[in-house]
Length: 266
Ligand SMILES: Nc1ncnc2c1ncn2[C@@H]1O[C@H](COP(=O)(O)OP(=O)(O)O)[C@@H](O)[C@H]1O
Ligand SMILES: Cc1ncc(COP(=O)(O)OP(=O)(O)O)c(N)n1
Image (cartoon, rainbow, N blue to C red; front, side, top):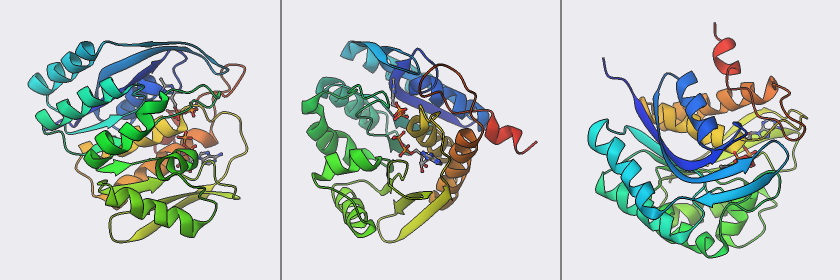
């Protein structure tokens, strides 16, 4: 039997709610074997990011080589990639190892307000990483930064999604967590059509790591070979359950509950 294998290329969140920790928990819960290539270590909790330590480019490259050359990668995701030089290494390795099914979560700022992407890397993200994406998953502010304009209506968000597809992403999801709305609606553009995925909006501070968890759930379904619409549907259900049943951990924006989706099905 083939065991689906997913790789996360991202930063570590010592608090366990976002970054590679959120990704690995999500992969595990969705029945996928998880692997990691660390790009940076953050000292972080539910309140703040108190330190960021980037790994050398060579360390990032060797980690990707190690897993791709032996274990194999059915799908991968990127999270925090703070600098242009690490972005270049990641893009080169994704091409070299022909990693398809790449989900790009263009992480820019943590919920605590601390930037996780250096300023010059914002433009590089569009030029270097975006064209490799099977799916790119910006939140509202990340989408605005990528296209360089305010996206305060659905029509503008649709135009922005088309713009990102023109830049090379096969599919675009503009997430609705930061959109002012009674519901949490994510907009998918598959290159030809638009779809929306809607869930109730929960009024909770415990949303640390929502974007990481959502993109990891997408990656897990791609690793299993699921089609795009089923992939997004599953990821939306996973993150909705995870937000709906918070763990009440820490004194700030607590993590989502990675057990909730599986618990609701057993
Ligand atoms: N309060 C909420 N209630 C329900 N779903 C939410 C809430 N906040 C975010 N989501 C969902 O979580 C996922 C991640 O979205 P978002 O919070 O926008 O990403 P990020 O963590 O990158 O800022 C999306 O599917 C979004 O709709
Ligand atoms: C190490 C690390 N990577 C990514 C993030 C951002 O995660 P995200 O899912 O966007 O959640 P919030 O930080 O917005 O809650 C992070 N914080 N740390």
